[in-house]
Image (cartoon, rainbow, N blue to C red; front, side):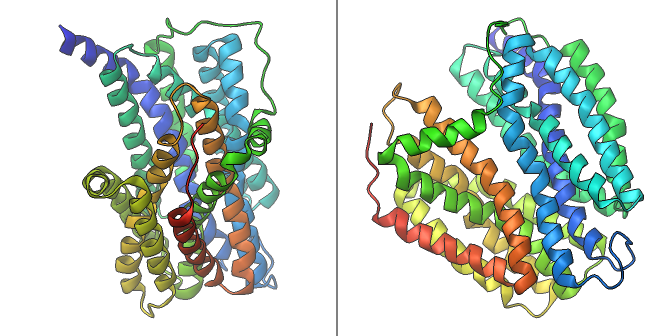
Length: 407
């Protein structure tokens, strides 16, 4: 009977997993397609006299739009769902996502840079609906083991989005078509959510105010807790370097070797699969051998060295091996630094707020690292990668020396 209940809970969660999947799929498409598209001399979004440095800078800024939208949109959509109901807000946001992807498609087809910037930001804003899906998954059951399993599936689905996005790009071999296909599929997801999503556990609170500036308020809370300045800063450096790495490597690869869209897409899909496998199979055994502080230190320093070594290969085929090796310790540093933070917080003493602040730092790091990476690449195309590696090494030594207080 218990097994049957769990099966029903997982089945009801399928449309929520699909929502999370498309959120990360859309982001993966922007990472895979924007850089080769803007650097492609046959893509007429720039004049023929536009220098490569300008294209690299614009590429970084455009990559920052989607996560910037998510950063600002997550608390807003979360508050709206509390006020008006998760299902209603989720359906509206998915409808707007369809318009957002159509806007990206038209921006690519019409070579309209302004529409690309706006549509990328707008789509990221609407794709913040993954926060609704994650909250709904947590409330599907009161059983801790089942809840952990449901949420764990969500993280696996997000990883699949990073794998399927590049694969979709490699199949279509077109800059615009993947966004059109996504826009055409989402209406089916809307119907699925309308029919299958049961929000019976969600209590609508119409008196709640919509938290428009909640993301910014999170940083106010960060600076009001002086004992956590350094750990927040360490985590931000990790988020900035790791998330930035996966956005600046395509800049470096395209500028250095100019691979085909298919080759670049498969490279990104391959590294995404390595990341998925590392967290799934390697992290747990390593966590048994080292405590969180030791493990984080080893991951950051070794990862930083491997990241800097990405600039050494002279052959495109070698970058597959080097990028895959660098991805293993860097991607495992993300959950490890969060675990380290939770181990130094007494249960019930502001844990939700502190972890919420940590998540806000993660999304801000995604946006800012992409933007700054484009600017640095305009100076020297390998400079962003070297910078990310140095930041990881510094963060590793800092994590080793710093003694985190408890509250």
